[in-house]
Each structure stands twice: as structure tokens, then as C-alpha cells.
Image (cartoon, rainbow, N blue to C red):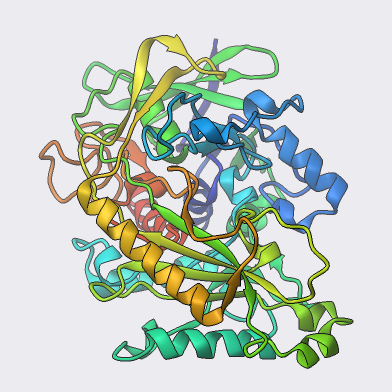
Length: 508
């Protein structure tokens, strides 16, 4: 069955990148008809809102609904002997990897299925990319402007948390180690976070709803914008000349399939979903799914030394939730001396629990995290089956991923840095010693639809996100980032989506 409506643009994926394209096109071309489809349901009262803003009951419900194959409440069993981590709330494991090495084939790879995508569950860190992390073939001044627009869309601030004495002391300690010889903007400082400060001191976290802006409140505007949850894009339709002519959609509540007509499709379905849809559409670009890039992650939890967090100061602030918050501090990427991204987080701001201790100890606990760059290789990839399907009925993915000798040397260096910080700042909590977590735990997957300067078989799209040799087809999201990075990628992927939106708008 065909949808009689013709859309100026169909966007697949409602995470931050897809929402950016919807917002930018709606503002640049107010009369354009935009359809945004999302395979998962709407799980929050406001489309794409961060679940961290919800009360515990609503949050638990929203997380369950976005868990794809586990949305019925089932949980994934963790088996540390096989390096098979449990999925975090709101997510599901992409594949069921069986093996003894937690760094092989990415057993920690996660996905989410709900309006807002992983933007419902992220920790909102938006550090500016450092020197070698930046896309080298986008003019520097233009990239700066794109990053600034991304900060506006995400509401990035360094004032999400109050500046407490504890946080100031932590940053002084870190600065004494890392600030020497660095440019001013690369010294230890508060982490830029996608959030809006509130009088309570507990931020309101940004989600895809923040990026969508007014579109999040007007999900269906006649002759303009429509968001369809629980709608799976099965394939992009192209004519005999290879030009986009539409999209085949499936209503996941009824199973009904339809074709919608459009000359432009933007695929922003995460670094695994985007190449999966292009593969299902019959595209066989040499780089599709290849150059899979993750960020090896070293984590630990530390009791702060009383010298840094004096007991009397902690006692004075113990009765004030606002004053007890330390927020997130940032050690910026600064290659070659520090080709890492460092985060120091109060425990409830950390992306995962590191250390399973329950104690009456009143010393503050912080999480130390160090993300490293990855040696980007063609053989690190996700491939898709011609015969088997996943939970959504799409070609089943299989991940091939490992660490090179260069990666292992980089990780050893990171472990040494974190171990030194623990010794300087306190002691590890029981079970919270510095350790490399299973591959995929960062959820910062990149490169599978990477951009490049030329159509030489080493990239999927051009610097504006236009898929090579398929007029009308665009890709966006973390998957387009082509550089080795250690910093959280969302700010960069939103900035690149702004550039893609400008290319799309020029055709409408």
C-alpha cells in the first residue's frame, strides 16, 4: 500500500542527529513537509525527553519500553566469566556474543528503541573535540560555527551544577597534574553538559525534545511536520537510476507495510542501524559498516582523600542536596601529550556503577573515567546477514572488532594515568579499582557510515553527509565521524548534522 502524501524529507531515527535535521529544515524551509520515523515507541510525556528528568516510576516505565526485545520486562543475564555485560536500563544488547575476551567482537554493544533514541538515556557530556579529533577536511572556522550551533540546540552549559568547595578542590588537584603547558581552553574545568541549571542544583537534562524545540510539542502539524513512533523503515527505495524515490515503512503495532514518496531521505539510526538500513536497501558501498570505531574506557571509583574533601566541609554540606553535588569535571583531550578524554563524576552522575560496595562511609565517592582513542581499521566492522533477521525483522548484525597492538599500548598508558590519579586523590572503593570495561560499554560507536573527501571506497558519504552515488540519500549521527576520538561524540555529530541539514535545505 502506498501513502498518497509526498514528503519533502523523510528522516529515519529520532535521536539528537535526526532531531537536529528536523529542527534545522523546519526553520530554514517552514513550508517543507517532514516525516520523522522512529522504530521504538514514544516513552516519555514529551517526545524524546531525557528519562533522568522523570520521577522514578515514570522513568522505570520509559526505560522498559525502550528496551526493544526486553521491553516486556525481561533482563539480560550478565556472565562476567564470558565477558557478557548486562544491558543498562533503557537499552538492549545488540548481539549475544559468546567468548572469553571482553575486548573481542564488542560484547558490550548496546542499542535503544524509543523516541529520542539514546538521547533519552545519555549522560549529556558535550566536550569540545580536541585538535586531532576534529574533522580535518571541514574548514576550521566553519566547524567552530557548527559546534556553536550544536551547543545552542543541546543547551550546553558549564554551570549545570553549583561550584562547590569539593569540586573546586578536585579540579585544583587535577589541574596541578595536567594544566602545565596546555592552552587555556584545554585545562581542567567543569564538563560542558547538555542541561539547564535549576535553583535546586539538580539540572534538567537535555534530550531530543530539547533539540526538536517547538516540534516536540506539535508532533503533527498539518502540511508540515509529523513524528511517527513505532514505525520501522525497512528499506530506502531507489529508482533505476539510483535516485531516491521513497521509503518502505512498517507499523510495528499492526504489522502493516506502506510506501511513502519522497526525493530525500536522511538516515540517522545510530552507528549500527544506519548501515543496516542501507544494506537492507541493497546498497553495497565498500566502506559500509567498516571502520567501526569505539572508545576503550578505563573506569574506577575512589574515596576522596580527606585532604581534598575535608570532613568538616562535608558535614556542613550534608544537609543540603545542592551543596553536596560535585557535578562532573573534565580533563580535555590534548594530543599528543594527552590523547585521552577524562571525566571525574559524582557517583550518581557516572554512566555506570564501578564498584559494588554498600557502606556507611561518609567520604564522598567519585568516578574516574578515561576514554582512549582507537586505532581505526577497515577490519573492525559490522556485517549483516543475507538470511537471518534481528528482533525487528531487519538483517541480523554481526560485529567483528578487536584491539591492535597500538590500542593495547594506549590502554596501558591510560590505566597508568588513572592509577596515578587514584593514588593522588584517595583510595579505590572495594571493587572499584582501575579497569578496562568490555568493548562497546562507551556507547560511542562511530565510523560505520563515515564521511570522506572523495569517493575512494574508504567512506560512505561526502563532507555534507550525502551518500556517494545515491542522489537524495543522506546519513547523520555518530556513525559519520571519521576521526579517532576519545571525547563524547554527540556534540560533533549534532554539529555535522547541522551541516547536512544545510545541504538538504538547499535542495528543497
